[in-house]
Image (cartoon, rainbow, N blue to C red; front, side, top):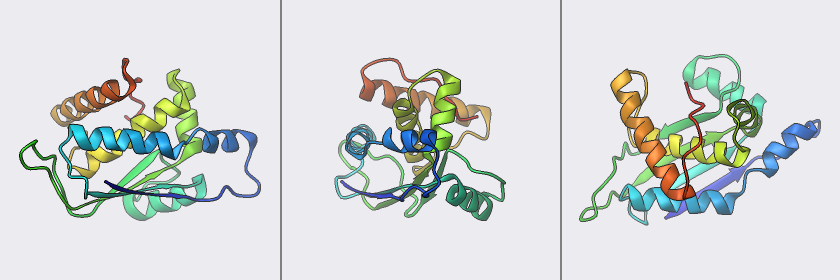
Length: 168
């Protein structure tokens, strides 16, 4: 498994809350989560994934550029090879794509939902991986399928009930 992390530096004028949200992002833990998802979804060890961690200004720019929506968001996913989950007999190979996370938005969502920022990062990472694999939640049936798989992956990784979904 090839996971590349691109953790952008905090702006010099970052607040204490922003700094705390960045500190809650632990790449080693995220790598363990990605490895778990790859195993469960039967993705080959050769599959490539990039995760960027950006501030609200950069996330806002990306959100407008790619989604034509104002303001920062929690997670964006950019698929590359349009991969789908594989099987134990035939694991999927290729380039999965890029996930972009925004710690300050994640921290606010976690506080509103009543769980830790670390749990929110896990939720957003799994959510991003599922989007990269073609899942969506625009329609009710898609939402049901995607969120059930998301809860299953998170519960399996965390060893407890998955955190409440913060993604609408």
